[in-house]
Length: 186
Figure (cartoon, rainbow, N blue to C red):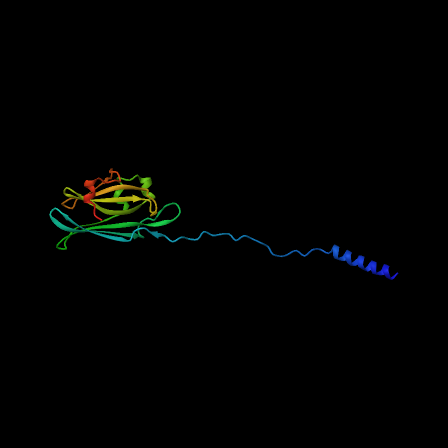
């Protein structure tokens, strides 16, 4: 009888533990929504270049100063936003007097760049190119604000001896001959 009693107690213990509900953890796992981080608007300009040239028998100093301008419309390369540039072109005579000072934005070149392309591009840069007769010639780039991109529209600015400014598309290839290499400034 004693064995039956112990067997009954063991069987009852097994039944109680077998019928007991398993404890469920109360941890609820929810994935946190990733909010897009606001990216800082980038600047693509902020440089100053100086050139010393002899033009029309006199010495001139050319200064090209690019500055990212927060007052202009921002442009995007599809992923990041950039401030557009305002570029000042100054030509000083050797006596220190100013021959020309003009500020350019991409809108100054709207007659030579398609409107759809102009909306998503920036004034990337202006650099001194060469002396062409009575004109100072500058290369202009209006294009993608991404520095690693080579997407741009090449333009030319010609400054005449009277200070006249003309803009045209640059139809030259991106190579130079031996004659042009002599005119280049490094």
